[in-house]
Amino acid sequence: MENKEELKQKLIEKLEKELQEYKGYLRQKSPDEIIESAYQMTVKTLIIGEMSEKNLDYYELKALIKQKDLLAEFYEDWRNSDGRLGENISYEMDNSIKIIVDRAVAEKIKNNRESR
Image (cartoon, rainbow, N blue to C red; front, side):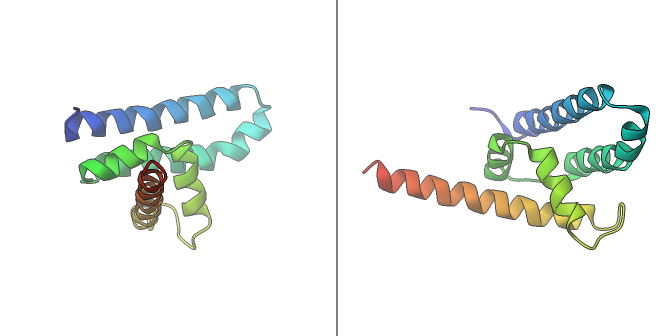
């Protein structure tokens, strides 16, 4: 069983991998499209930095690691808020984390009921 620090490292690596995949996607685009995407890359980089500062519990870490396209979800949740760069990223991430964890708990409860 992994400890909290190992899970945290795994989560950060997951987010960094998603960012690298996004950068790879951008490398196939025109210079103008890359320039238009610079803001998104900046925000995603800030999200990873914020995540490394968060003190999450074991179950939150597990739920986040299982979440597909986590970095994109954090970005979209932040983008759909009324926040400004840097100001509300941590707050919006906390909201996103709660939603993701709540979904994971509901899914686990559903799976436990169905397996009975």
